[in-house]
Image (cartoon, rainbow, N blue to C red; front, top):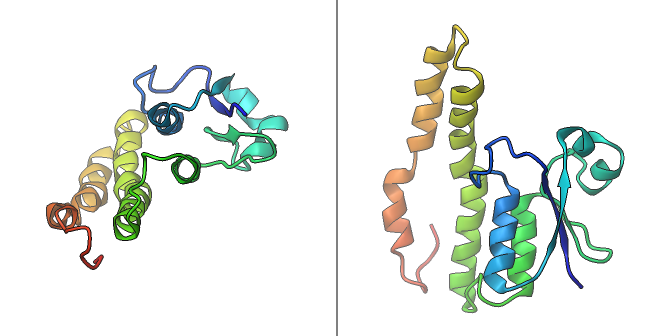
Length: 160
């Protein structure tokens, strides 16, 4: 069965690949899975049909038969679980890869997204200069100094 993903009809990033459907497209392309795309306007994302697939009225969604996961990380994880090549077969290496996937979504991305929103949307506010460097800048840098060490851990090492 060919899955269908929902994506922006007109992306806020003007097609630079930053919208979250790009993660799902990448995963599907990597595993060689054909897919269809249903393009949605911002108003269609809030209409009754789409929130039935994504309760927060966002993109992406993924539909394959009766299965309809939402949220890019959950969709990519689903694809990785069903197709060879995105996750290592070794259990320890697989756990490390999944850990980094969650770290990217839950730790690394939020301060980067906060900074992007502040820069794009709030740059004209009187409090912009105060908001930008702290806490966003410090949050974005926290922990990055340890990443080379953690990434270099051998496959059989204990996760930190």
